[in-house]
Image (cartoon, rainbow, N blue to C red):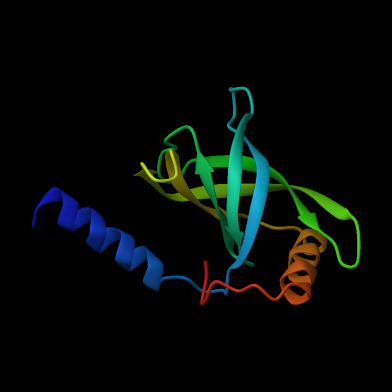
Length: 131
């Protein structure tokens, strides 16, 4: 199998492992890698298990870091969150002009899980069975 075919196979296997429905979440977030300054990313989607972002940097598989982002609150307002995450994939995307990075939530506190659950229940734009 060639390298591009292997990459496609790996991506497809990763998609099949999604446990939760995803919802669109387009906005700005910040990744904090230990020992480095925070950098800006663009959020793409979120689920109870993690989120997808577009990053200017290629993040290594299984890197533990922190993600800072906001969630809209119904009927008004925003929730500001800082969560521990693990990188589960990072793939260069010319179309997105960056790396598509999958982040898995790690040890979410109950109040943070409740905030994300409330967001998931309040919005109706689903992307299918998600991350």
